[in-house]
Amino acid sequence: MHSYIKANLAPNKNIGLIKLHDEASFNCMKKSGKLASKCLDFIEPYILEGTTTEYLDRLIYEFALSNNCVPATLYYRGYPASSCISLNNVICHGIPSKKKLKEGDILNIDVTLIHDGWYGDTSRMYKVGKISRKAEILLDITKECLMEAIKILKPGIHTGDIGARIQEIAERNRFSVVEDLCGHGIGKIFHDHPNILHFGKKGHGYELKEGMIFTIEPMINAGSKDIKLLSDGWTIVTRDKELSAQFEHTVGITKNGCEIFTIS
Ligand code: MF3
Ligand code: CO
Ligand code: CO
Image 1 (cartoon, rainbow, N blue to C red):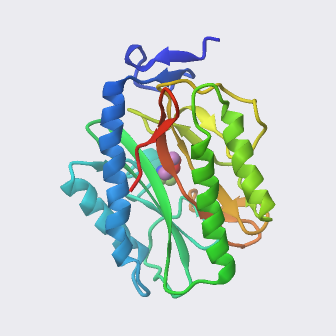
Image 2 (cartoon, helix red, strand yellow):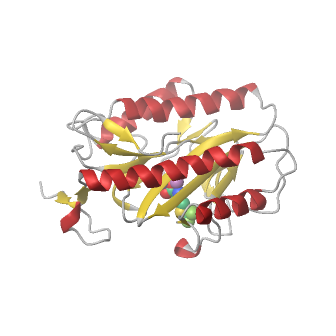
């Protein structure tokens, strides 16, 4: 009942209410989202065997600065890089390093760019050369999970409908949904209320309203959903060492559906 607030009336922090943004804010999100997706387009030709993920991160840093953006992850809660680069069995929050890409690797690159104070958050999967058939299917299904969830978005549905749709597609293909990490409200702050779970039941959770802005970012595992946090305090891997994939978009709820701010 008292779950929503006009974003313009709310302080610039997570206050446990869902912010409803106006058209001017949607236009700002369009710009930051576009830049984040352009950054992911830009990095694609550099995904080559022998390249280090640290080098890719450096290029992303330079892309951000030369496009009047700040990479949101840099120094965020002590995170040391401009992107998260998660290889193979890494689910998310992989820290760019001197490790070299090799043929057959799959990797997620997640960038959040702040432009004019607004956050655009998106991630995609990339392949190094030829990948296994199983990896190929995992990538296709994970992308399908995200895009099919986006298709149902409109005022009146519930956050649980999003999770249910994703879980249905993943499990129908004998994959599992990571439950420990979720999508999030976003706008002038990085991680806002509400959490967008990638599993759940239809009709549960919050009702979507025009003006909501959030991310959907399903992490889908080839094996079990269980995770492990590495001792660096960031890197999250599959407990069974199987492959994991993720795609992410930032979206805004419109009168009749949604707008994808981070579309390429
Ligand atoms: N971009 C990630 C997300 O989708 C957050 C990364 S936070 C970091 O929400 F500190 F790990 F970089
Ligand atoms: Co996100
Ligand atoms: Co992200």
